[in-house]
Figure 1: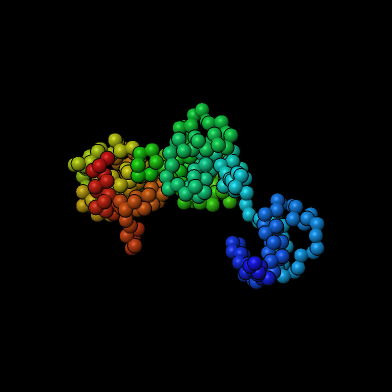
Figure 2: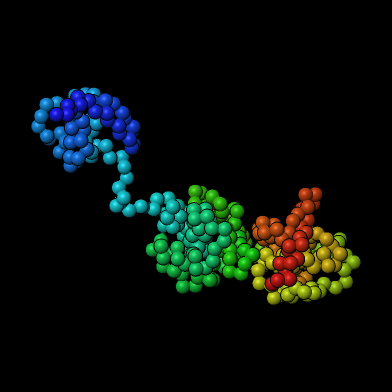
Length: 298
């Protein structure tokens, strides 16, 4: 007859690792703990188990309490929902709501650019009625300088000045707009100040509206591309770089002036895509080789 061993070697691994020589009786108790249904381990009558294995004194329910349930649905954090973006921005008008959703796409979901349909879907996700005149209200956000046109047709990007919109809200931006709207009506009707001819164009007798191999200025849809077009035309006329005041004068002669306050925003898009660069001495803008290729592809 084979003699039963008095001790067995126990080795456990998983969230914890444990090894120890224990008696056969203790091994049986360990097996009972492991195999017993949750909540019934302590209900089994018998002598109190020895305290050699304090880690094993936990019930199965207690040992898995910190593990997440696979059946529990993953909830989207409130701070990362379109509804929260709308509420935290304090948007009131439709253009403000459109821009708040643009900020959500850019700052939360990480989109570099977005289109009309992307924003329409966020109105639905936030349980907001899609504006009847969406395109008109979107254009108001563009004219306000909150949203800018991207390289690709139908693609737009958020203005750098609204990078903190979801934290700070519209208070500062709305205040600036209100102060302008309160200006006297006579000032609004005042004839714009004429811009003198820049020195670099003093000898130029004629401003052409077309460039060989490039669509005419009036056929270029995006303001940003029109800025690049004007820089290219200046180069053709012997002016290798344009300052902001030169841009306004030249584009006014072409029939659709780009006002000074919008030039920086448009240039940032061109510079980001490698289509133009700027002098570190006088901030004059120059077209790059990639920019010339881009204009030819329009």
